[in-house]
Length: 320
Ligand code: SF4
Image 1 (cartoon, helix red, strand yellow):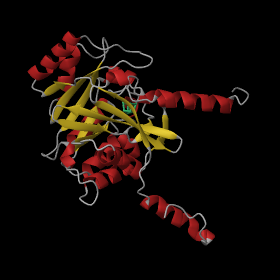
Image 2: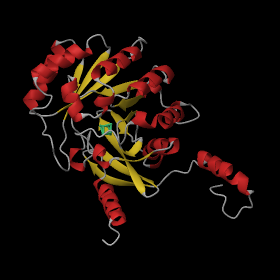
Image 3: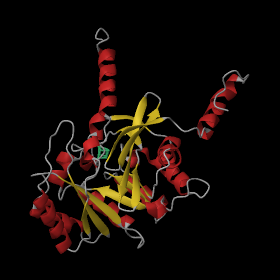
Image 4: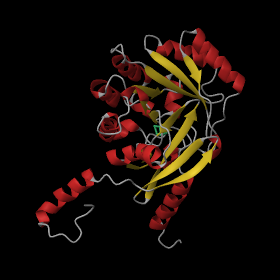
């Protein structure tokens, strides 16, 4: 049963029945492959009149699926294409899980790992993400081991604490830090005005109290902004006492560039300095850059143009 259409239903029972149908509707939304390049596949999942983006990234023998938790994002990180869209809407449990289902069962792709690093701030859609994690990890659901799933946040402290309390300790947490101090972070990540780096560190420390847990620190390197060796030293100092791995992500070009990618030698020097300070540090090889599917590039330009035109015609109804 997909709707109440044509059925005689008491008016007062209709809202509850409709909600039950919505909650038990496991039909899979439509999708289309947007681009495919060097093994990376970006596909769009249809959600009413909107779409969310998912990216399948092959890595040596394994394959990682990057999924979205929202269409757009309200966090406004200045280096991120999705942040420019604003938040259009959050995804339901079914819509989040559908991205994995489509990749695995419909497109018949291999999915070894899942990362919540697509469009949106997962912790701004906390309950749906927790529900999706249940479905993804339950044997009766898609049966992924929790250790194969990473949830990434820009640093919502209250939700990090809730995740610490409720999440399976085998699930991975990634925190997008991107700066060695508040002065830089406040400029590139508005979330830092609500929760500064000291508050963020306290939340990360609480998360690490369980010895099974460690945090993946994400750090987008932007030329002349946060890529100096002094920044590396300050970052190393900030992370002291936390159980972390560091992932350096050279900035990816975007549709209207405010920042520039760092020189390769600068990335190497930053990496070596972090390692010398005792941190397991990797630099992410940029995949999918040509198809705007790399980190920070998900932003569905076509959709943004459509929304812009829709909004313009609403505020200026005479224009067409
Ligand atoms: S980096 Fe993440 S949290 Fe920040 S604007 Fe982009 S999608 Fe949102």
